[in-house]
Amino acid sequence: MAWKDTYPKDRAPSAEEIDACVGSPLWGALCRTVEETYGAAPRIEYSCCSMAPGWNVKYKKGGRALCTLYPNEGYFSCMVVVGERVLPEAELLVIACDPYTQELFRNTKVSMGGKWLYIDVKSEPVLRDTLRFISLRAAGK
Image 1 (cartoon, rainbow, N blue to C red):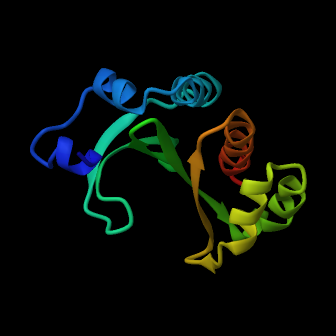
Image 2: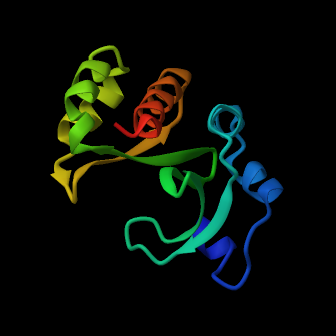
């Protein structure tokens, strides 16, 4: 059963239920890092977005979105917006990234003020890349 069907709009999942669904240590690693590094608290919210409808977890710092996490069975996706002002820095950062992340970055068009990266986090190298993009976002340059 799809995530959005398991937890319909009128039934928010708990943090424990999300952890169980994702079932990946990478989820906990990303959440702990964002919470400890930026003092951001997770907010479980429902989205009707056609790209990824259903419950997700948002992290914000000072009213600024750092990232949004989308649970999936066995893995998760992380959306991070790389603003146009930091694209030159991101271009340098991506050189050292995993080939998956490089291709995703290269194929993501600039839209609505930046690149909206929707990263499937399924490995340690991609987790590291994702945390680097979140760090760039948090810097707020």
